[in-house]
Length: 246
Image 1 (tube, rainbow, N blue to C red):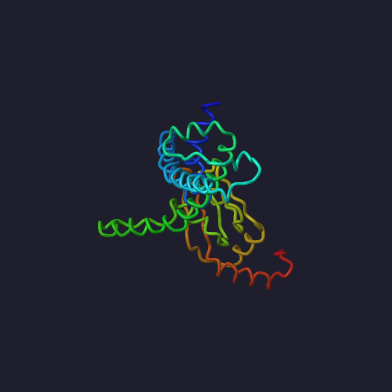
Image 2 (image 1 turned 90 degrees about the vertical axis):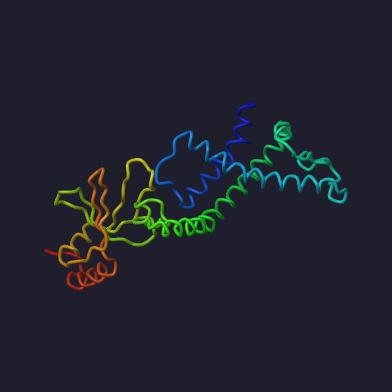
């Protein structure tokens, strides 16, 4: 039981913050091993703990004002909350189930808010300063996306693509509607209206804007110019109102 409480207090805040940051779109270029995850959790645990302790101690201070004390004895609102001045105070308070509930709730709210602020504001500011230094060192700046996959396929834009293996003539064409996250095992994609777009591009030449190449697996994904593809679709629909080409 003590190990579970220790895990909640000293590990969960950092891991939860890292989890939120990943959900908000800032993913590492490579998967982290256990030791790296432990180091990240400790670094993220420090600001979370500082904020949680500050809020708790402010509430503890307010609990000493008689006007704010409830008439009835409510466990979580009991008089004279104990201040947290050291880790030993935290360990002793962890024996209270009410404190654990309060700590977990406050940790979830704080980690979410901090991760949101970090992903929307801090990340861009740090990236700007880092790229300024890289430019002065004559090194290409970093993109806001951490991986090539994210920069190409996770922009929430409509994309008409052609998927094939390198060196093979057979391919699949369609509208890309589902793509996996960067570190999702066994990458899979979902294409919509495959037959329709195969016919459109067979009858009309559409400019290819980008070609994504997975060097390790030999996968090639051609990304067509969306405006040209929609123009070709319009011409195709006029020529074949029913979509039947033969």
